[in-house]
Image (cartoon, rainbow, N blue to C red; front, side, top):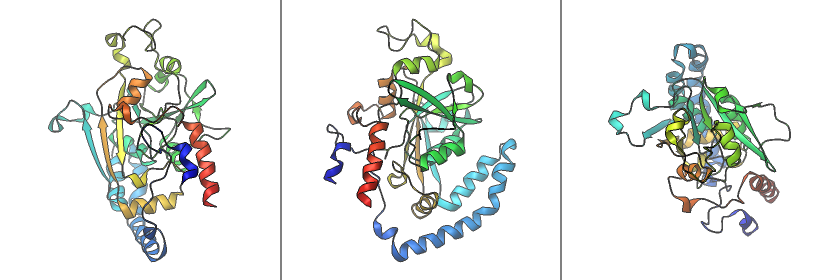
Length: 309
């Protein structure tokens, strides 16, 4: 693996693009065959419930049905914690609601499902793309976001995703923003694929109160622009820094089970560095360097693929 030292952070030693895979014995030979059979049987049991996920969405019953399907397939378990609120006092009012937006770390396709399940309203996902100094924010549906993560979450030269210029354009949704622009293996938070100037403009920060200014932000002025972060943590082997087929991923979910930890943090300023640190649990020393960004990951995918041939 000496060839891949360029993709390991020199300060922390973290290699955010290296896939964390199960033991080879679990995905080869007889155990692999047995795992495929079990996954197929689970799908057969869950299949009758799937139409109801769509049919009952307007009655707010689709999420309980979806949770049931996930429990059948992978023993789905999500633990949600709201910072500053005792667990016994946590209620629907503390969950993501319509008209609010959250910055979230990004490591797997299941992130989108977990975020949809805890949301109190329809959801939309925003992912930035930086080419040179130009930043474009794309808006994805739940299904689009799932497919994007399975494919390695790298934008192609052309994309059919909808462009969103201001977060207020999604005011009728719970908006989740993945500022890293791509997935990692969850060991750190990647440099954001956006600039401070773009973030201020996207969030609608009024001129004179830019978070890039020397003066501290007047948070009272921006009550409707509360910046909150959500930290997601899933089984390490279910992170998808590299592309993976839908069946292989489903099989891995089924054989290993899925456990999510979701932490909704208290509000922070809109400074890029502070948001990124918040997504890393407040530990800025575990952040990887600015060179391990989306462009670096694109090169890594190519090199990693060549090495495995």
